[in-house]
Length: 317
Figure (cartoon, rainbow, N blue to C red):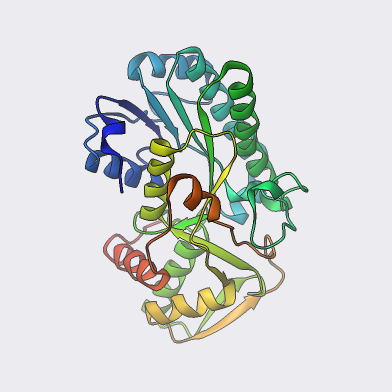
């Protein structure tokens, strides 16, 4: 049940609106009748730079900001660029929220990351466990930089009564994802590797780790819907998980992707490579309770859609 009245005559700025998740958020805003959507392009506005943020807010004059822009990547990219991931994500988020408050932007929707959770969080991850330890080392700088927006949102709500909310989406997947092997996450990387191995007639495929970690994945359209439902209906200080509530091991995931892509060779596990966080699965009850969000897409159906999209738009790099 969408709340179209909420969006009437609203000017909405979606940072990262040209990206993977952002493109679906923008599509859903259009479906809700939003006419005035501002998408700052990185060539025009470097959101790490305070002056560019101020200029962007003057140009956009938004009523609502949905802050999706981030410098992101998989385990390999996080291990190679921890300083950049920390600095750029921290400076973007903290300065943007501060300037949005100064500019009297009505509502700020901050998108965090599941990487903010402690490495050994009890399963399923509950929002109240967010501060019970240090994040998994390979992506801690990124996770902590994004988590500072939660601290900021709560502090600005407390002191200034500023309406900023903080959402924690689990790993996303779907059409239009990043399939570049140097920076892609696990699902797009595996889809591409399986399809390329199949096309070249390879008999085996190497996969990072030992297959034991578990992950939860949320279809990108479901994530976009959850973000807009939170924008419409949630005005609280507590962080809220966005997930599917379903956990799958990397081993089962690889087997499923091999099956759906038609790769029939052998899977070779490179145990010298890191596994990342041992388990990841969310308690998604808060999102359902606070703003009525429940993921709708069956995982196998979502994978089929993602594979079909990539087959029509194969990566060259």
